[in-house]
Amino acid sequence: MNYISFFSSENIIRILCKYRAKAANKRHEKHMMRDISLHVSTNKILSSENNEEFQILQDFFPKRRQWIQLNESERKSCNSSIKINELRLYKSYIKTKINIKEGKIDPPEWYLNLLDYVEKIQLIIINVENSDYEMNKPQIRGIKKKIKKKVLICRPIALYNITDKIICSL
Image 1 (tube, rainbow, N blue to C red):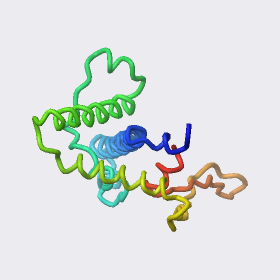
Image 2 (image 1 turned 90 degrees about the horizontal axis):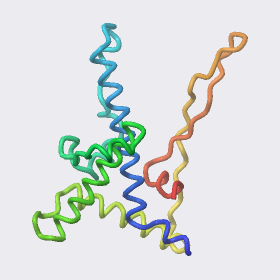
Image 3 (image 1 turned 180 degrees about the horizontal axis):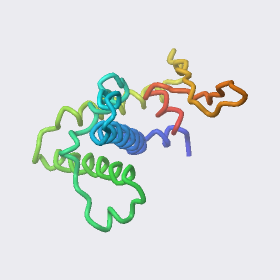
Image 4 (image 1 turned 180 degrees about the vertical axis):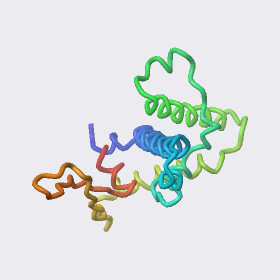
């Protein structure tokens, strides 16, 4: 088995579904906190307009209301809401793919964007020896860990762009 088989379009799309489901969950948590909070500073929380990764992922999948609903057994097979949303996204992709092949619908814009992006990643991998592609430096952020003797100790977190994350995770 060669390394290119790991970068099949299905594997890349599954990872994109996972990232989109996580982004949707984070956005939901922000909205929920804003809606239930009585504190003035929390009520000013905005959704992910500034989140570049969310904006990119949003272009690859249908709007949330258009995600395919799961039946009871599919919902019970998932152990978290993120997994359920991940499966809903993947099922939406599969259903759209089938409908396009059968000629029932024209390819939606999100579907074309998704296929273009997957092809772009596959080309990077196939031509990795010949291309001048380099992974970007991650953005390092600190997350508060604890305060020890009046010194704030932080845990460093590396944030990569979406393309680099997909290439590293496969």
